[in-house]
Image 1: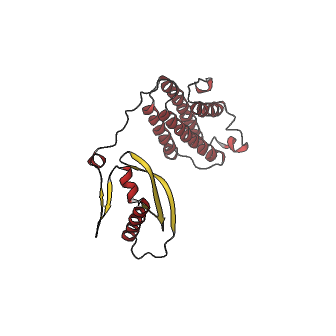
Image 2: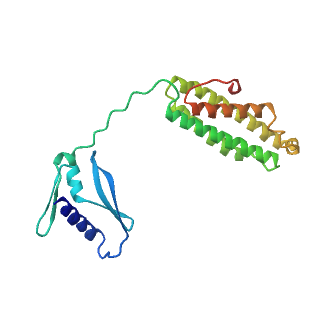
Length: 231
């Protein structure tokens, strides 16, 4: 009887949804169907990229009833199923230990923006391109925005400790960027074009690179650590 109902209900869905279809590509499969928080297995048919579900399975999952009359198909769903909202479990208490997930994500994105800022500026300086304050400001403001997002996401004590190191790295990149912009204005950047490592080997550049690598590793470890390069 159930197989008969499945055939009838599926045929009804197919005929209503895709009228005139005779040579459709059909793919039958079983999936977990969730209706207002109630889950159960249901047979699905995929026809030309669209899914059709067994009405009998819908009735079974929702504790409803399905009946076929002379000229119509009637699906009755319990009132509680269609009107009661899905129960959402209360959020778990915040974990005060370690780095929080949102802060780690924001911190990694902030480091990426600072790296983009520094690497783009270094490339321009080494290759003798025109560098202006307004051009650099675009990178600086985006990095600052991401650091602010990390600050807003800080929840735990370790988040706040790590945030201080992140702010220190931003300040170091800002000072380094200002130094290069001023050097470009005074035409004092030719020395950086003579050697591929001239800019990289400067103490402030090394400090920024070392701290950036450390912070990326720290965020990946999900726990706070300290390092002298970020001070």
